[in-house]
Length: 167
Image (cartoon, rainbow, N blue to C red; front, side, top):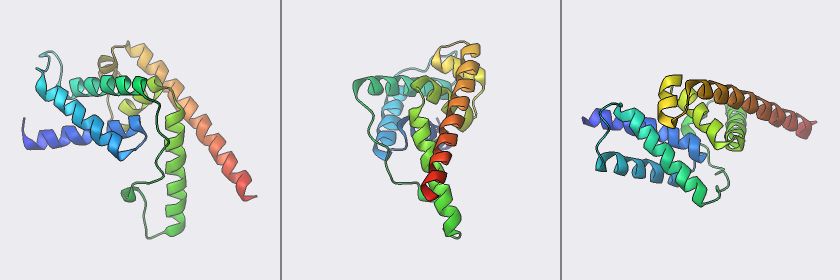
């Protein structure tokens, strides 16, 4: 494996782990490291792509971890790279929206959060997600639709709550 391929795989895994863990940096790093340890300590099945197998390993590790412990509260720290310091008001609104999305994502079921993260954040096809999660493509589609609907409802409720706070 080339260094550029490894770097690209690590970036993809970090984005996926970010969506699974709610952005807690230590959890992201731990999950990426555990995933890479498993991926490089075992032979990749010849019939699948390395990235697909890595996502599957990562998903299984996260599910195991999720079952062992209750999820911690979301970190209040926002990634600096996601806000534009030039426009302070817009930056505050962006920060509020990002926080609302993080909170809403954590309120989704694990199944919905996984499918939404793989399709939306990582740009995977329904077929790739189905292979990673060992579910039919139709299940991927229905979970994605439900996740999007639920996320929309949660964000609308959050927006309504914010309007009431400032009135």
